[in-house]
Length: 326
Image 1 (spheres, one colour):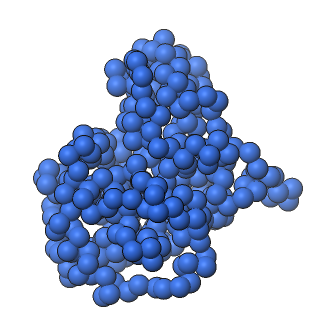
Image 2 (cartoon, helix red, strand yellow):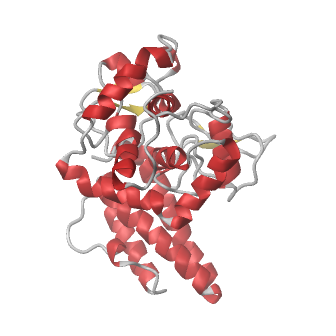
């Protein structure tokens, strides 16, 4: 289920620093997205009806009957609605301002929902306990990848993830950043799914709004970019701060290591394979961080793991399988 307790406290607690004018959260786990009132599914249905008045709502985003409020049920409809609104806005400049109001509201909903669901990194105390080297984990990554199978009940969700990464609008942005830094585009796309729910109005670092520097860990990033639309510069900052740029080894095992490193190794300290890689597969069952430094052994991730996305992309023939290890 969506972490409603966290979801309902996303907006309050922001403070403005007088000298800089920047907005920062009063607590680390609160992201400054504007929370909607009521059930997320009803909020989305209302936005879809407004979009339909502009001829912008697709069939997927028009909700009929009882629809779950779970993140994985809402996400495809919401991302689809945002894409439809963007297409309609480009096709009808006269209505651009009116469409923008609905588009902004849909983007805020996506940001709030993803912030509530995403697995934050472990707290500072846990991060200090153990630093894993690639050599320690290489064989484990290959073993888990080999046994990874998408759960049958998640097959449609995984297929949607793959199709969304391959959408020309999305892929072109991943490729532009990837070519600049020497990073496979689908590596960037998988991170974007997990951190931001494919929201290009959010930082790749952690899904915080692109209109200001990040509030959640890592806070205060990027130092230089052009808000509120400069997703590429922010994404480059997120990847270079971990020194992913200019690397020559993009083998399968190394990519899985860097993906887990991006989110943190905290799950291993609780005896499970990270959902950041393996959620929606037989490798992962339950357990996740529900906010910074807070582990819930019963919580189940409703985000598709990056390793699962990569394996599905390769199986589809959408990308060439990388070498298993360098």
